[in-house]
Amino acid sequence: MADNFSLFSNDIRKGGLGSRKPRRLNTLLMRILIIVTIVLSIILFGCSTPKVSPIEKLPSIRLTALDGKSTFLTDSLTEQQPVVLLWFDPECPNCDAEIRSIINNMDSLRHVQFVFLSLVSVEQIRGFVKHHQLNTYANIKVGQDTKFEFPKLFDVSSVPVTAVYGKNKALRQVFLGSATYSNILQEIKL
Image (cartoon, rainbow, N blue to C red):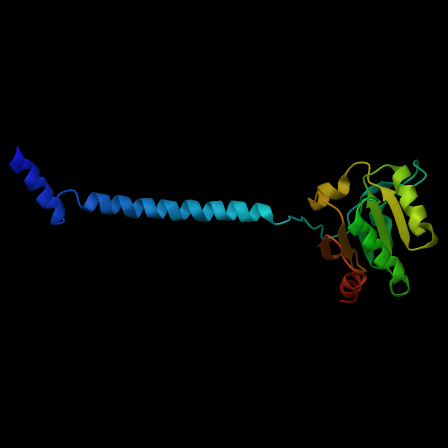
């Protein structure tokens, strides 16, 4: 029996009996490990980046006007001017900063049609409009997105989101987070 054991261990040391199977198994396990690592990396890193499903043409989103009764469609705006859709929340500091940036530079943006839309109540939106005196600007429309169309169309869940469309209603750029006056102006001038 001792001879059988020593014969087997000599074969393994010499690279004989059984030495190829562990090497093949190790190679196979390494390949599987590499593939699993790559797949997990793609899944994890793919989920951590914001996803935007940009709408190539200006979408038709039905918004409730501030009177709470009438509605208007975002795609009913003229094709002669660029359009900026800004999804906001009145309680969001970044939204507030972006809107202040737009208002402070309105002289350069008079040729742009702005549509500010929010999911909050019409009363909350009215307070925000009054605070920023948005009703004094002819090129700004504000409405409530009662059917949550904007976040569904753009596949977003946080505000602000700014979609800039050119004169032909073709998408120029989508900004996740705050966009500045200069970001918007740059996209419109392109």
